[in-house]
Image 1 (tube, rainbow, N blue to C red):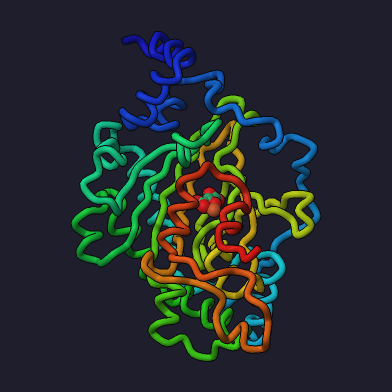
Image 2 (image 1 turned 180 degrees about the vertical axis):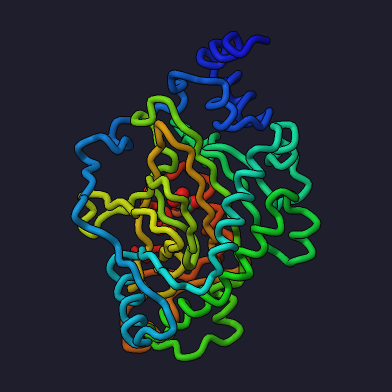
Length: 365
Ligand SMILES: O=C(O)CCC(=O)C(=O)O
Ligand SMILES: [Fe+2]
């Protein structure tokens, strides 16, 4: 069938579009490559979700902290900057973080390599087809629950063990994704140690380590050029369910973070060689609200393809998480109840992205 015929059929029929994007595994990348000039209506977001609307003012003069983690920097100053940023912003960027720059470049290249596979290859990893429940390729966030789709393709890799990853992760990106995960471990431990110290957790024993970083998931996100990009989003407003997230973004830009007063959005400018760190809901819960998991979103781009590679550092699915006893020791009242982490995550993935609503699930009212 000629591409124009397929395209006009898809523009008219939601099920044809879903078949092409999700079932056949072409993703939004496939839509872009067909030369689509108009955004299909399924992707048109309600007015209030579009970045161009007045309720979504970008605050240009503000910026999240950029923290130099070089070893020769004053330790105490670095530690304070990290904890302050986690309390006030829930988001910061780190430079001289110790993850080799080549490892970051390699995982970005590997992301392109995966998405350049033909749809017949990628489709092997969709929810319907994937041989492993730990490997999932898809488009948008939760198409079954969303009123409007998001302009994003993703490959999500849940880490269980090296052997399992080697046996199941797609070859074009397997080694690079694993290497990025391995090489970021020291940074993750350093950040968690620093953040725990302010919570009076002086030592991360085995149980605490499981709560804080017992499981990890790495996503390879692909956001192709988007027609009528102002009418849609690449990722809708959400907070992460992780303990913390280490995010590698390319030089395109488009990630925005909610301001403290919730009245505007701040751009997270791409900085060469930097990593973005953000606090997730699990750490907001464990710190009893001291560290903030902040709403963020990604805009779609009309002229440039963007990739990003977050590592979600999580508790184990079987862990029951709640505010740490050390935090409550001073008599502070618990703001969150104990929740089974897998239930919390299921709750997040059952819905469309809805800002900061997920954490209501754990709140003591
Ligand atoms: O692509 C980005 O910059 C952010 C991605 C993100 O927020 C997520 O995957 O949870
Ligand atoms: Fe996120």
